[in-house]
Amino acid sequence: MKNDPSGTKPGSEEILLETKRFTVVRMVEPCTDGSVRQREVAIHPGSVVIVPLVSANEVCLIDVVRIAVGETLVELPAGTLDRVESLATAAARELTEETGYRAGRITAAGEFWMSPGILRERMHVFVAEDLEPGPQALEPGERITPRVVAWDEAVAMCLDGRIQDAKTVAALLLVNRRRQPGRMPTVRA
Image 1 (cartoon, helix red, strand yellow):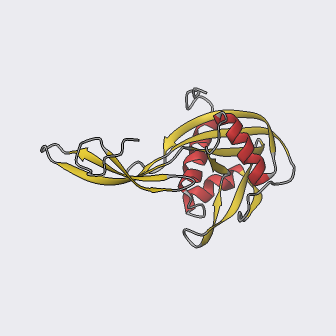
Image 2: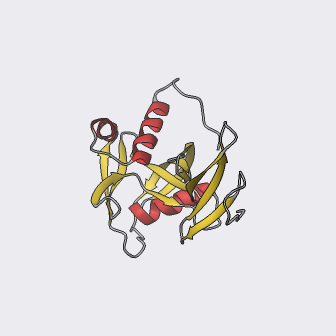
């Protein structure tokens, strides 16, 4: 990252905060009138979200205690790309850590920016199939409870607001659309 403490050159970045999982920088953006403005952006290494198909008609969701919003949210398993490994390996690892399931097959299903106005985080969606149950391997402090629901119920939960987590809504609706024959092209891996 470029570090311009004066924050005056277009394209310059001043590091404001560095944490274990992300860095916050102040970026200078040129405006159409020739002036510049400063924006604070969180730089994130990226992440994976996994759609675990327990069967053709069931998906494993998780209940996660989220301190940032003070609620337990219904989500898909997911995690930060915080080590050197392939995207598929990260997805398989996060699936096992959070649900206990091990996937016989992991397939890329898409990707998207999480919140591009303030956050540089690319999320990669994977579908996990041929699952074998096993024990969770939670990190200290994680409070995650897996639950298996019917596929149609999970989609309904996205549409009626029972699922409020953006990555989960996006991934479930994306995969739901792809599950409909002849609807969507295959995604690059």
